[in-house]
Length: 453
Image (cartoon, rainbow, N blue to C red; front, side):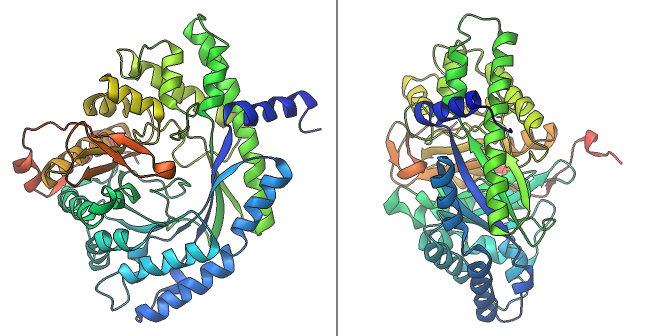
């Protein structure tokens, strides 16, 4: 027998009491065979292919939920970076591609579709530039499409021309959705070392190295990990760490079962299992509260980075023992608006933008879902991006930035995005200028340890 009665009861308890869930099943679909000189014809092929390949995704997800009793919070699609597919078309504005994806997502009933993306870590092609220029309008005119841009890698360094450009794009995207607190920026993320198999939005895309289609899973369980920590109150940190690792093992086994079953029913290969602890605005589903259970008065207090490093490492160690398919990001997300504990920490003053940046050195992914004043300059946003991407480049890890400059609001005001995106107090930003640095452009060279052959 694969699972004992005790394990089954224990897993049910995780679902019922501690908000364990499968955060997302994400079907990656290659659109490379849809490219052509006619944008309209290519988009028709895109629509037909997605309806054919992903037509049963939601049905399968709901069937597994009902049969196994496992909540699957989001059913998602990721596609080949649109810049690669649309580049051969005559389209100057790629917004119609985003609108097509949004329509398919709505028709299929999926929550999000990712892949309005470009990979520009070393340079930008015509297609990359056209896609980036289309982002503000595309994010304003769609509700389920997510956009991501990879600006750097450990091997190639950071494309500072693209970093400068993306600072302005973020500002323009916020302005285009000013009536909704700049929510377009909540669907836009920039990366260093973006993984090609990430099931989490807004960064999901179906990488060029992936096959025709693949099913990946993102599991979550901050509430379960917190409950495990409660059992080890007062214990030495190494004993606590072992308890976290054992719990992560159990969570991962559940995710593997769901992922393999979903892939089998869809007739596609099973891709990866992303172990990331992904919080939600719901009470009891918070990474910040785990850190506080470990022994911090409030997330952001001295010791936070060390506690987060231990948490992330134990989640990974437990996960890789349970599955040979671990991939994606895998660690602990620390988004502000999506974590009620982080929101509380910001309100009491224990979390600042600078402390969040320090925490990203030891977790995944980066500065995530952070609302900043609407008058923050494009150069300052680019500078924040450059800092975070440099952490990823030097440490050979994935880092990302999802900032939301909320039009018309200042530090201390509240921004509301709704649903899983939550809401957050607006954090102050360092007021000193980095414009001369950002405007230099060029390329930030890769670190010396990138030269491995």
